[in-house]
Image (tube, rainbow over all chains, first blue to last red):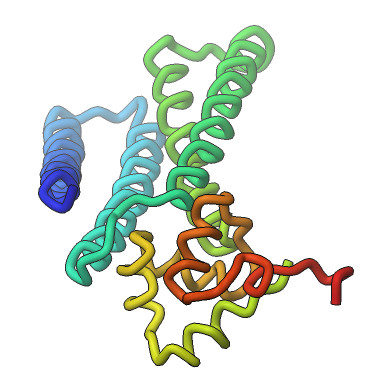
Length: 139
Length: 66
């Protein structure tokens, strides 16, 4: 169990490092390529991605603290919180998709990439927001 | 919901970490259990009661029972 927890934490750290490197490279090359038309959207999506990465890093650090103290990284309470946040972010992703469709048909044109980015980043943000909310309240 | 977990834990000279290790949960779970903010499953309540050498009835009670 402990070994499995250790592997999970290490994989989480590697994923976070890879994501940070990926976002950094994406921002660097996009800037180098001189993208101007979608600068605001790019900056916003990098910012939102970084918030998600910071949320994941805090989660991993908490798990590491428990692991160092010889405690499990997951238990009944954390699983309950995980299920709650998962279902909330799933419902949120459906509403974001509906919102994107409505905006596309009425106010402005949204590309498929932008819609998918909004769904992924939006549901990710809502997952971490609800995770920290429920974690501070005790589920 | 209110609990007597802290009183029993202190009586047994255990820290939250010791109790968490004995029950096999994270320390945060013990913190919220003591505050009465987390409703545990029957199994977890049983495990905590067993770790503190007492019964579930002595650990957990609702405010209307006081």
